[in-house]
Image 1: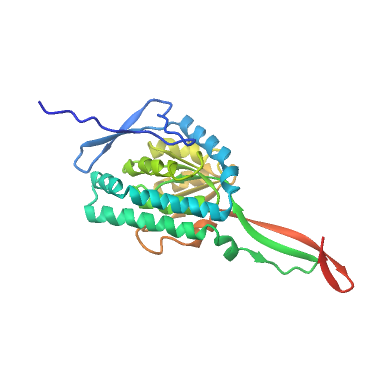
Image 2: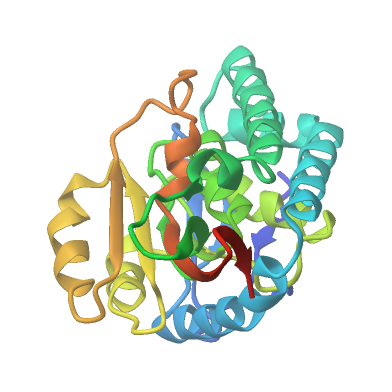
Length: 292
């Protein structure tokens, strides 16, 4: 008698824990030949709301860390992913990738994390400025995180697209609620295990699996989500824009081939930053300037 394989059930990642979806539902991840390869939790509206609560709660802790410390944490993510490279290669192959492409995707993902780790304590210096003003003031502009960001991971990419959008957002001090690729979800929850072992505070990144058509509306219309990022989902763009209007969410849509070198850069970080301007008065004493 042929043995029946026990398929792994990939749980969601929310608030630094790995719960099952509150609805108890699941769907099967299918390989290119039509074979079931895993059970994936099918998240619900309530899972989205719970994840947003966790993201908001963790925002102050994460944004309050020094930029250098965030850089260390991102580099630790790269280290842990490097140590588990073979597991990710196997999952990519299960989802239809060739071995060569799978190895390249994992290595590119590691390199991209290191790239954004290097930007954590540098982007503010490059983007900030001292502004000329006509009054007796110093005037400074600098960046601060926009807040909780909803992220719809690229549908066609299991790992590299996810990493390419997630890393610049959290490198700037934001927290994230991420909906993983519906068609290629395996690496997303395994990547959550990497995050969980990498000193990332619980709730900074929350990863849900399920159907975009069900999870996008409550995420993009949630009043405590400050921005939405997504890529390659043109059919959802109009609905995301409309749902984001009520609380004036910042919406960023990217058309990029994530395996190219130009699919990384400073603007992916600053797209999810607010510019804060500070006025500091100057007192003129005997022709000299002093601050108080």
